[in-house]
Length: 113
Figure: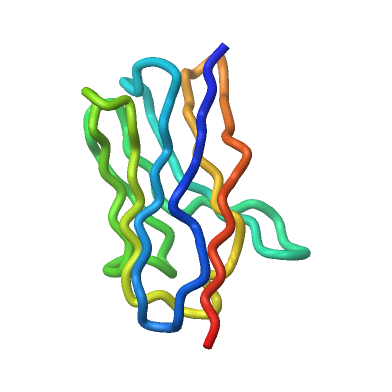
């Protein structure tokens, strides 16, 4: 069973930065993604990286967030810059194996003065 563990969330001021990490129990040579879920709202895609390394981002984070992976460490990262209060949410790591879909428990990101 694949386990995904997110870390790196916390409280930051507007304009600040955070780096989220997602450590997988096994290989991350699958499509990986970051999703957010704000209070009272549905889960939404933030960023995704395919097996071939192609990246895509939600329009709201383009130019501010960067997804990357370190296959040797079985870890996916989300570098978050120029954070806004609207970015406040729980961020979830996802692994898409095609037939199977795995999720972490999430890490809280709060952007506030």
